[in-house]
Length: 100
Image (cartoon, rainbow, N blue to C red):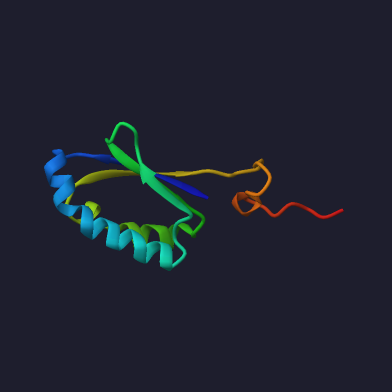
């Protein structure tokens, strides 16, 4: 699984100018199954994305983000192997739980 941290590199008015295109890209990526969750950082300095896509698919999707194309945000991709989750979140596990 991957956690992607976006950090804005430009003034908020420039972020806002590109926001609608970013949101449309994000919806397409969700529709394609690339992301499991997305949201803003608090305070609003960027955002976080959670993905179980393979790295090649993730990178290809991120390359289409208007925030990336227009230099609005810096992207940090961190690989994360979830091995323990709360009940109901088993789909986030790196490996399916073994049945007894």
